[in-house]
Image (cartoon, rainbow, N blue to C red; front, side, top):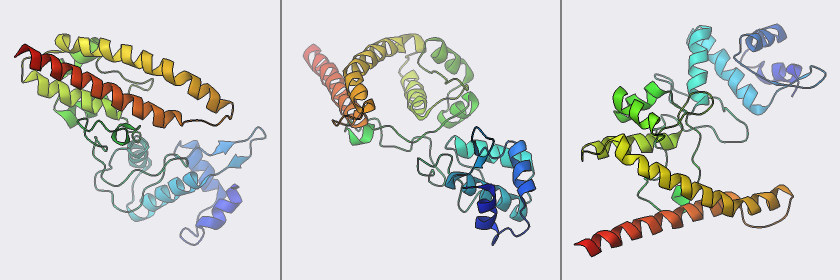
Length: 244
């Protein structure tokens, strides 16, 4: 959608909106429409929803740009914005907007080993401080967990939703006297299972990339994860039963 079409779309709610205002918001980094090689701006539905959120926050809440930027950053990372009610913009037109007031573990509990519960969850990105606050993990324990590779940040220095589970498990296991150095063996075992799973999935992904029909790699990944976790639980339970 062109910038002129965006003005037409939003004119009813924001009659004072101009092309200059939209360009200014882009310069401020609040919106990022796609740019063609010719420099032509192309706005998606997600861009329009984001722009509507910004304009509403300015008009109805009198939020300055810094507050709006912070709110958009939290929404982009799948987090709740304190005090925010009403519709929120989609961070990506290809995925549904996050539900209001999301919890950090917006998924079935880890104890649910079904493939449906283990499919990839919606994106949530937390800073180290946000992760510690959500899980009750203290700074020293966080440092130890990261040093042993149990917690890892992405290129932007953020943690994903799975790290919430890791941190919560570490906090719970600490009550049994287990420290990060004791938990490192789980990291080593997980990395081996990851390598095996990727090896099994790679042929499927290559076939799908070529447009060939076949099982959905995401569905197969969830099934493999379910089966391997069930096997792990069964082996540990069997070993404990035999040692009694």
